[in-house]
Amino acid sequence: METSALSLLPPLLAIGLALLTRHIYLSLGGGLWLGYTLLGGFNPFVGAAAMIEGCIAVFGEPGSTRVLVFTLVMGSLIATLERSGGVQGFVTWIQGRRWVRSGKGAQWLSWLLGIGIFIESNITVLVAGTVSRPLYDRYRVAREKLAYIIDSTSAPICILIPLNAWGAFNLGLLGAVDGVDPLPTFLEAIAWNFYALAAVLLAAATIAFEWNLGPMARAEKRTRAGERLWPEATPMIDPSLLDHKDTSAVEPRARNMLVPLLALLAAMPVGLYITGGGDLMQGSGSTSILWAALLANAVAWCLLLTQGEMSLALLTETFLRGAGGLLPLAMILLLSLAMGDLTGELGTGPFVSGLLSDVLSPALLLPAIFLCAALMAFAIGSSWGTFAIMIPIALPLAITQGLPPAPFLAAVLSGGIFGDHASPISDTTVISSMAAATDHIDHVRTQLPYALIGGAIAITGFSIGGLLLV
Image 1: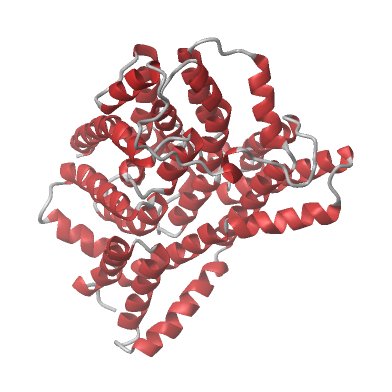
Image 2: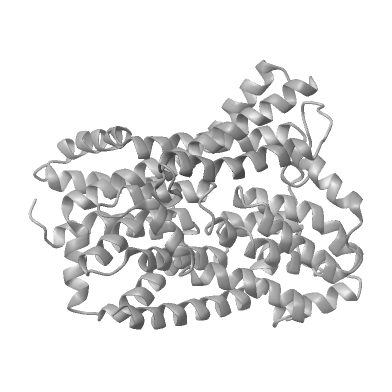
């Protein structure tokens, strides 16, 4: 198919459906169907059949398949850590140390937990919220402040780390873009990820200098007066999420969580060293993260079998249940990889590059991509869905312009995190409200001023960066 304006229709349909329905599966599926219909001579039935084959073809790429398997294995690891009593044991261990003796200490604890527990954004907010919430109440610090801090150290931290489900998802998307070396590009983009860095540092500055802006100042004043919530507030408390109750009667032990996570961290560089023939930067990211996740699961199993409190049958059942828990994310990744292959076949990237070069100077491309990703993530409440749609467009645009792809990746990632952070329908925002046991709308209102400051910092950074690139 000759490259033309028609190549824009599939991603535009995916974006439009995402904004209209907020259903990322339908959006990506609709875009895939339209794209393959165009390639099939405008025959919708041929397009539907080709779409199925396009999704199946994703498994023909070993790197893509490894990332899909890694996503499921990470779900298994998360479920095992929870059911083993590791999460609850860690919570009990932290609370028993009595390291926190003031309201500011409670805030620093929640910030440090958010930094340290980067395995998955929801795990981050749940553990940090569960550990810190009683301390916030004891020292009369607003629960809205807790929700803001754990929200600002969940997705913004996870997006900076390749060794988690977020990293695997984006490495998989990068692997589908021609001319991009996934892991080096991801690592180079970390320094350009202005919103994620700003969000984490702004949360730290808020704690250090007691920056209580607007609604947050009113929430702090109310809490110091002895009122944990506003009279009309409805705290979002889900006991099954907050308490991590163990259903298998396993004695909670912090090491059941810490040891597998340490194995996960240690295995990643070893895998990169082996697969890169002694050069970490040349190693296979998809292979290394899969090895690391499998090793962490194996270590967790050995610990639990040695303790004699979980049988092989129960561990197997937990493994399968956890894999099923992340199946929705694996499906998004599969459709996203297929969309990347499709846009490459349609020539969407080169066409967009030629189109934008006539409208925008290269210096304006980075802030424009950041804003597009931010608006999309805010509207659909999903940074992952935003990455899935924007990465296959933004990176080919950079390559055809002769510009480095890492800043463009960072613009997409930053925009997606910013929009997700400010969106009231984001799952991470909702779960942060749950973990802090605060009213959801109150959390959104108190967090928004900080998010807007971080967004302003990011768009300034991308504007300056765009000028430096040309």
